[in-house]
Length: 494
Image (cartoon, rainbow, N blue to C red; front, side, top):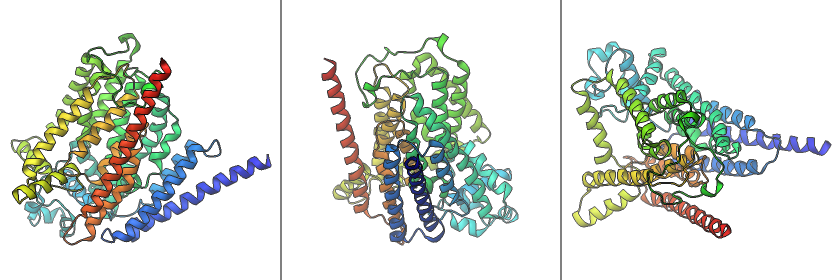
């Protein structure tokens, strides 16, 4: 008994030391580090990840003394350590606040350019200050944040019309609620697909997640919660099979079969109300960030034609309804104008595109982003569809997040712009799979902050190359490992 008590005390002390050291690192980055101080940032960031990987490996091997509830509490406490600050690593918050202020005062945020609005009598009357305007990074672009996100933005200036810190805290409440939802939901989903619920530790304590979502106020935290809630309700409603078939867990695309030979639960075994709830959650995910739209095609393999068409129709219908409050004759043109900039002008932390850009300079002497951007967007869309619709024998719930991980990974490898927080979706979904390369990616994304240490902003392409070489190398290693497992399983079955 004495030895057992000593062991529990040792476990508690290790968890306490980890929590205090990590909180200290988050406070040092969030309150005392300017994003132009790259070497200070990367040193702290690397230290946080050393702690993280060491603690996760120790916890996953631990038999007792630290429960999932303890991990969830530590995760919330670490997020609270960055709660009372204006984001210092990202300036997106200021556009969120701007859009929210427009909407709160009855203006359509999709129709107003900040550069045209600032300095007008209306802007002065509503206290759109030069401080807010100068802090924004998109003064000449129309907003493209979807309606549900705009509503969340509006609560911030609605409660704190003259206080940016107060506004940041309001937004952080929404994101923290989404993250708490994920900390609650992930163990349930892991259990449902016959994996250890302890896997939630990968999300709960990840420094990249804490900094990019709660600290930097990126609403992926809300979007991912809604996305996983949609999947969870499909499982709960009996629409996704959860039988224990571990042999297929390690394969991305295990066995080729005819597309229409899909194993589906009978109508008597499903609960339609959960399909409706899932579509509502998925709609809110899409209307927080548009990227979940890319996950609609693979549902066909898991729901079948009839149920998929119903699902698509509800999601598209609800999305159209939410957008209908903002649609005017000018809306589509202005929204499309900003959307096209994403593929034809903006570039950051790209991989394949940067290689093509270099070739363009060698052959034509200038940047061919207008050509390569469109071409890569077509390739990424077609590639995502191939991965989405490539059939799986006995498709189960555990295969859907696996497809989602590789769809989005391929999409971002083809993208011209990959901001750090984009990878949070891949990293969270990967927890539901055997693959861990997104966790490595989350660590490597710290290199992207080098660009802010230069004036004007300039990426270090050597660091970008290191990032993608490590990530792709780790991915290839995991794919080869999965192939060996698949081959061994075939031999043992003979």
